Length: 327
Ligand SMILES: NC(=O)C1=CN([C@@H]2O[C@H](COP(=O)(O)OP(=O)(O)OC[C@H]3O[C@@H](n4cnc5c(N)ncnc54)[C@H](OP(=O)(O)O)[C@@H]3O)[C@@H](O)[C@H]2O)C=CC1
Ligand SMILES: CCCCCCCCCCCCCCCC(=O)[C@@H](N)CO
Image 1 (spheres, helix red, strand yellow):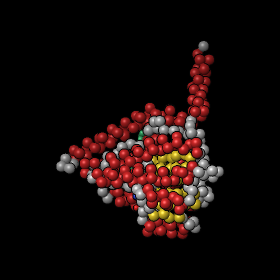
Image 2 (cartoon, helix red, strand yellow):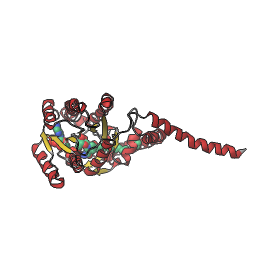
Image 3 (cartoon, protein in one colour):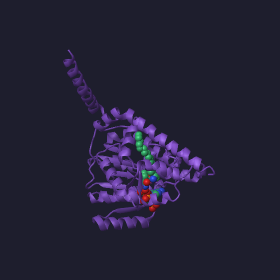
Image 4 (cartoon, protein in one colour):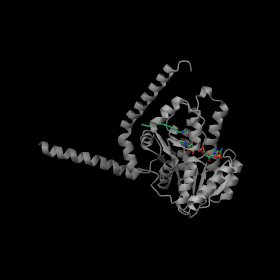
């Protein structure tokens, strides 16, 4: 009697996950798709430094027509020369501040219709809110969040009008601090969490036009901006951010471009990022039925890991305060 029961049980154990996989395969929306890069117009904001420059270099190497936008014309020219020397590709440069809608509109108009828009510009001034001026708070929200609205708003009509030029992409550079709030990043995290709401709503609005939204979540990344940030970063911010290690700009750019090409909505960049994306999947769209399966199966365990990280971070915070009573 025990033998048929056992084989029935193992059959069930095999069939249940298969049935779940089949169900998820049938229901995941939007449907998976691919975004080609070669011979297409890739427009990158903040493309003169760090992650944006690495993205511009990578896209140019893959045969894209690349445009970069940032404020400083000197840094733009330097980036242009560097990419020209190492890939032979001539990159178009546009000097504009993303906070200036008219300037950004003019740049988009001059650049011509965009196939892949990478909204990557960002500023980060770390510090406890109590010590931070509201001008600094506004600066981060303006550049990181409102600047992204300006950019998308300026490019959207032209992108929808692509006709038969193939699927389009709008990618937003968030941060792991846009998935979990981190000490010293009240304004920065708020600006990056804002991008998630923007991205989720926008994806629903542009899917009928074959435009696909990606949200990229890098950990600390070695860039000129990061070197600057580290000069004033609170010790506790560094202690907590270290949980996810650090990456090179080229590594982040590669992950980001791969994520854009596979039209992934969430684009984590390292293993901790994969855990973080699984743990914060919530109501975000998921195109991959395999990743959806991982999310469904792993959510409980990942939540335990998340609580473990919070335990560790709060322990560090209490310890730090005990050792620095005067501050
Ligand atoms: N480095 C890191 O640790 C991480 C970075 N990120 C995010 O990645 C993105 C890029 O960061 P990173 O490469 O480190 O930054 P960098 O400071 O190295 O480069 C920032 C780029 O954005 C441009 N930029 C800044 N402000 C504006 C503005 N108002 N209008 C137009 N362009 C602007 C800069 O040029 P210019 O100054 O001439 O305008 C530059 O090209 C940011 O969104 C950041 O939040 C996410 C996670 C980690
Ligand atoms: C469920 C388990 C999760 C496990 C992993 C959690 C690790 C989170 C670490 C967050 C680090 C945030 C760094 C932000 C970097 C950044 O954006 C600044 N350098 C400014 O640019």
